[in-house]
Image 1: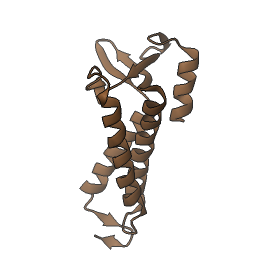
Image 2: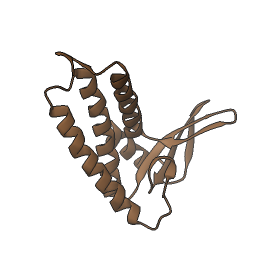
Image 3: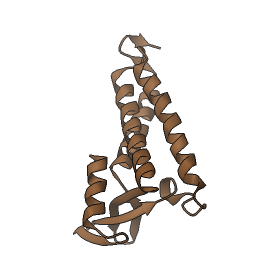
Image 4: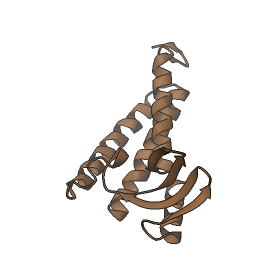
Length: 144
């Protein structure tokens, strides 16, 4: 879904353009060479390789965590969401040199930086991972 949505935006909208979709939602075509909230977007290019390496390392760790027998279903879902988001943005960064962000939320004076489906997966995965930790580390076979 992430790759398809980004490809559709790239094909349909010129870079930098914005199309109102709902009163609080615009479809935009932005490219982020940095990390979340455009952190290090103007660092000169080295960040592409750095964030790609971080995504590869995180993906390897997440696959190991998913495959562990003591990892329960909610944890697997959390790790899977994180993995999907990391891989979606990694593929974009490798193919385009930057991550395509296309969801733009605004309401009155509130503005949230543009994001994409991979970012949603990463966010939901992180929240679910936190919930799993707060619930006391129970697994399908009992406490850890």
